[in-house]
Image (cartoon, rainbow, N blue to C red; front, top):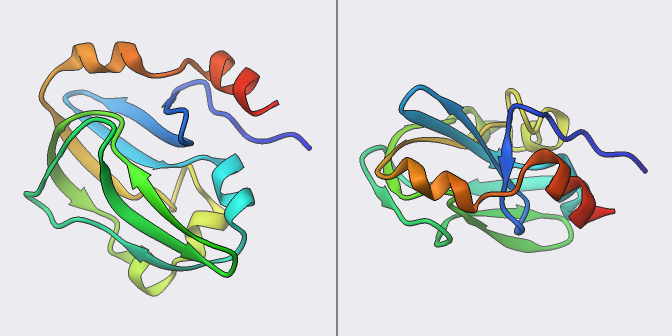
Length: 127
């Protein structure tokens, strides 16, 4: 099976993606992650203004199969959350890189991006 892995994202080994837009990073879970989870039924996210730490848990995704922690690719301050996920959590399954984004973070240190996987490295990890 072939999974969507956009080239404009970087990835964590725990299957989160990060897309940089100016000083902000939009974060979600990968196509591979949503496939592994199965049908998502509940999402727990931080609040705007909360701080997140690189490689630390910032939320939870609950599916019919499992409950999984979601980890932050970078440290920073949450500037936006995708509130639509509270009512329509299945967006994570249907469009993980688009309407299924989770949070936006204003990051503290762009050097943290160097620790993330390239699309090619992530592709190798999940194959």
